[in-house]
Length: 423
Image (cartoon, rainbow, N blue to C red; front, side, top):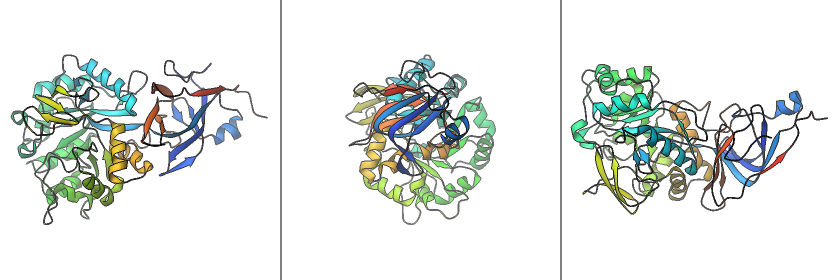
């Protein structure tokens, strides 16, 4: 009998029909069923008219809202592990975080490495491979390398001694990073000499280039985008503040001189970005807003001493600070908290909040044909959430398998049916 619980896998070829639910689809909430087979969301019409069969399993969702799984393109670690410093037990770090974030609704993520010694890149990059998600944890879309090619003046929680220039272009990039086949995104300061050749070189290898940790002005940002950059790392943070004579990288949200619209990450944790700034960003360029956690090792743990790359970090309340300073060092927020903050602080709809963690990051990474929507033939990575009150993740599914259920949640109610032909 096909499985729907969090301890087993679905039988190949089995068809699942999720009923008594609402779907986030095409920018709105609709009353409809969700059909899944072999890890994909499917169109039910051929089931009825061509195959003339019923679903093998029908699941009563008790009026839950079904939305795509969340995608986090910037996360440094969590649950006591830091991807940039725990090189001796890196596989354990990835495994623990990938498993832990299922409870927060994340089904795909980009492990992020902050500015580090060259030896760290050579140790870590070959060992963090792209993986499909499942019961073992969220899928890995590829690495996000945040540095070391950034501005010393806007280093934030990045160690100054390891920040590099790129005067020798891609030769320097390859010497520092080593192999790039596991890399999905690179954050780079667009004002660095030689940067435009590097942007073109990275983009030619299918890597998303993000501008950030930068003193660059708007002209520099526009030139970088027209060379292939397509993302802004944590908007408002670690960049020149908006000025009416030169809005800096923030001005890319409204620029008429760039060849393509940009996406931009934003940390909606109530600490990094004021609610008014969230509202300004969203109302200026709503389709480009991508929620990121920028979470570090303390995510899921609480107050105390933790690690981010080469630094010690002190967590007080909800603030992660470089030890002995007032400099923010990543966040401790989870993606479901980011969505809730965004909905509340920016005054957006539930659909807009969800799309900022699903559709928008998928578009930014160029994977919208696979993830980020409930469209037919996309991966069956989705969530059952309660939207009666603050949004709450009830169940997380990857490739059609239930990989997490909240402990205080009513069990899903499958009603099994035979796959005999319909009359």
